[in-house]
Length: 548
Image (tube, rainbow, N blue to C red; front, side, top):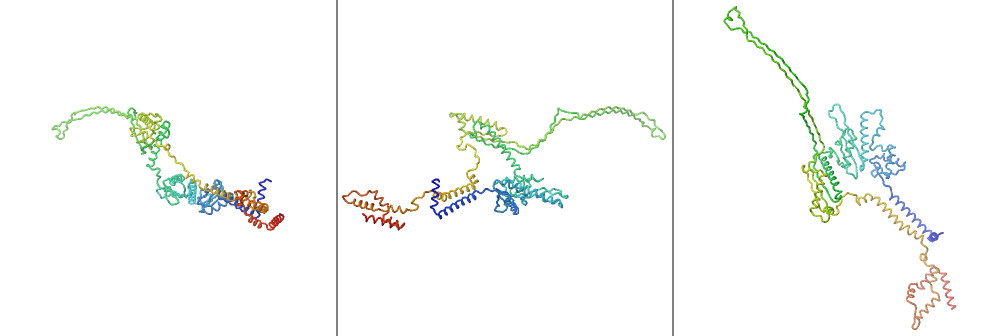
């Protein structure tokens, strides 16, 4: 076998049964700690499957997921079910096949359990409203950030003796987290209004779970003030884009700033106009009248005399005045139709009444273009050219009262680009804090277990056995004791230290003598180790001294 394996086996045999049992226990404990830490710290992230469930639904969902082998967890409130990330779609499809959940926000599946026998029109209408409420609530819950939703709809009712028809209305209660509640409320209002026939967004009220009113009444985004403000912002953005497109290629995107203020008129205008064309006429009717008239008049005249007063006397008539007349009349009437045009114009757009533009140019850029020796007159001339360019690009009209101002100034360093909001390091750390803590804790646990458990055990198994670990053997102690020859040499060395003799031991020998234990101590330790063998050695030394 290799030398390392033989060393390990020999070391294991030298440990004994107790030490091997302790090492085995430490190994089992270390592996158990690592396994438990890896399972606990590397648990999969859970996503919310359903919220606002009844306990019956929670139990049924748990049974179905358990039979399918999908892990799940129940929220602290007992009304929500969570599954590992990545299995949400699979779990929902599985539960949809089983018809779960059945009690929370029931939709059109309510009609699956409704029999047609004995079902009145009132019950059908109520079931339809309940199903519509459940479907809308499900759709609202699918919006990001909406945790739960509940919808109440009041449909219009038709009555024979009611003159005004009741308009439908709705109310929505939502529970949200991490979103702009007011913007989401406006979107929910339009969603509910589009899903219910005859319902307008103004009739939808949205509240949160705390009872705070999020949206009600008229939509503030459709008011005239909001519309005017939106049109102004759109016009200003378009004009600003025109200025940037005109100056970016010449000055660069970081060497100018433009500010636009536009005043617009969004009033609705209706114009009606009638135009007559006298040069264009058409005969509409012609009327002709002809009259011929002849008149003859003759009158007999009786003279006034005495005979008229006599009885039975008849006066003789004489011819009176005579007259005759003839009249001939002719009349024509012609009616002409004059050509006319009527124009009715209704305008719902906007009109720019006034515009103010301010452009600031980096003077260093102009100096770089014109050269270092550029004079103020040259810079002013170039600024005037830029002003003409901006005037042409924005459609400026001085007669309307528009104002433009272009100036060349020195820019501050560090403000070359517009500030773009970006997620900072703290935001990123906050989003991944849980994962980072789990990973760090796992690394720390593995490091501690490896450093304090596996490393000493591996060192003990692979280290070679040394005499120092088991203490000095009997032979080592025996060799360390002085022999008769060594004692004689020591005596001669001591005599040599007298005056007139050769020099004694060196300082190095003295140091060795001090470090080495005394012969009496070594002999006492030898006796403690093995008394019988020590007695034999002493007898042997005594026999050698007698022989000498």
